[in-house]
Image (tube, rainbow, N blue to C red):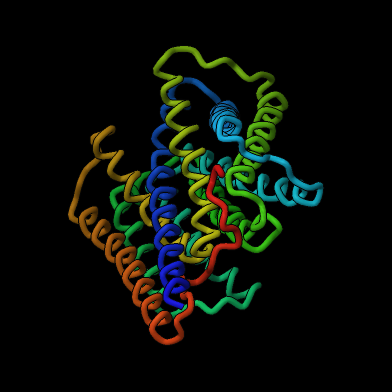
Length: 328
């Protein structure tokens, strides 16, 4: 019994670590994306290199680790649907970054924890505690405060930017729920992430050829550094740890830890672009840290209470469907 309780606590701890790593690395995506677009690449070219290089890295690492990439025909259909959701998330965010301030786009995108919780409650009858809802609202308020200085900034097409950012909320929350509630839950995390990224590369490569007429070769070591930064930490690492987090602690709790995304984006903006660091920024950071800390401590408390009451596992709002490590 005691072993089961410890296993539940360990699973939740692993899920939290994966979620924190996923959200913190994803926070670098706006920086590298805008650097590449500023260097002359189109949106489709940026996304093709992002997902293509990430797929090559994941595939190569998986082969070295003797990863089994075999999937069934029914699994392929599920992966395609998840690939569409993930690809549309990236495309809509790039469109949003180009038309409204990145801070505003990030704040709108960060509605996805609420959308994920609502989707799980509406379609799968998951019980969402008031503490989880409160933590999501507090973290959302923190994200808005982090972007307060950008809210008055205009864009080339504000309506398009807002619509694109809103679409990213729907697509991303749908992807997170799909990873947990479809056949994807039984696919090894590394294999699932590889196929989703490979699908994204194929999708954006075709779009680039169709709408731009070509996919240009990236030139210059600085541009390649941006490609690697976008493809490896902000895509490959972020996505594989996201899948692992969802399998260990569920989509709702994983989405909550996405609060680190605007926090990291803010820090990068201050350091790289000299953006202002105001009292609103400080308050936003405090809100985000408080929400995440509350969730961690509340989850740990529920795990201990469940172990003491029944000797069983109480690992948060979800237990892992797959006990496999990412690259076993």
